[in-house]
Length: 189
Image 1 (cartoon, rainbow, N blue to C red):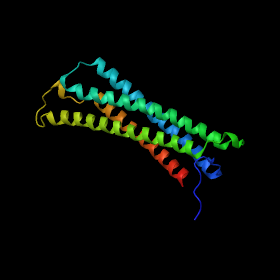
Image 2 (cartoon, rainbow, N blue to C red):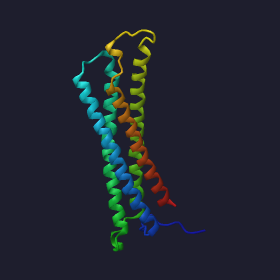
Image 3 (spheres, rainbow, N blue to C red):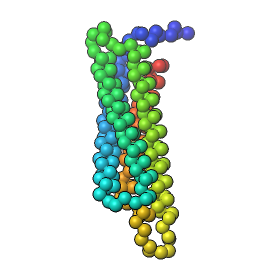
Image 4 (cartoon, rainbow, N blue to C red):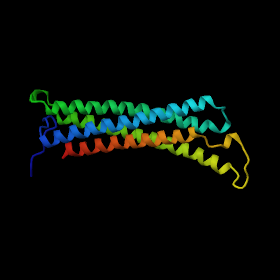
């Protein structure tokens, strides 16, 4: 059996360095794109909510917006963390072996990224479920055979915007988690 590697030894495997740099770059840009889309959609939803009359049934949507903002802030942290992955990739690619990060440092950085993505997935999932429940309640409260108009039961576009923002956040955090998990698995092999 091979002797286990010390955690303080630098990782210099060329294939790992190339993969690490590629995954960190792709993850950064995909999460940045999905985060920007979610941010824009949330701004539209909040502006639409502020410009329309407030009804009693919009408290649930408001909570969904708050959770989406928390998820978006967590995604901003995650995007920053992906930028750190890119910096680590540059250090791993450097010719000076004195600046190589240790395996322990890389593992810790990947774990923090993974944990932040998993928490983000959880928050965005709860926000999506809550928003979809409010939209479903509005749909079920409308009579099927009558054309009655009740403003609190009308499904507005902002309801769908909040749902869309939360689903994009789930995708962004999921992609970040998969990236961190894949790279972490590679480091620990």
